[in-house]
Length: 138
Image (tube, rainbow, N blue to C red; front, top):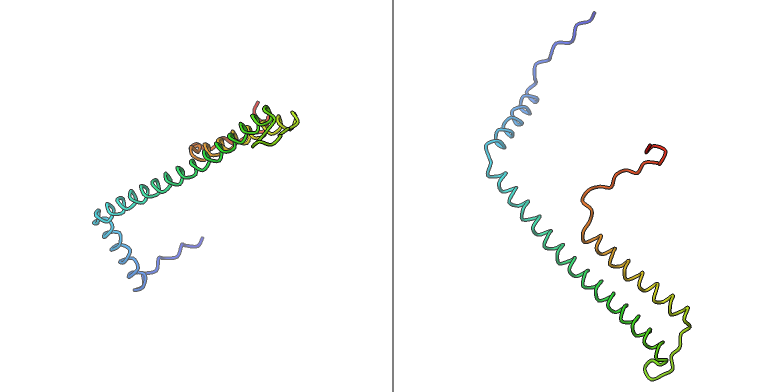
């Protein structure tokens, strides 16, 4: 059997590295003020991110609301114009299938727009569970 090699004595370079590490660890242990500053700066950063995100979300929400309100105003205007037969003093006529298609798609678009915005505004905090094939569920 061979014997394990004996540890070699540390060289001056290794000893210097070990002393530097020990001094660094001791300095870190003795400076709780630095940790408090780090925690304070972390809280400030998180607060700033929350404020910035709040204004961004408020701005995007206002844009989504204005866009949806305009879209629905166009729906009402075209529906009334088709019912009265004129738009802006001129004759206006739409086939009923075109009117139904327009109202259906615009309603679905407005609802979808709000759903996308709300999912961005209130994201899911828990990751979705991994989907398993139906054969493995049983």
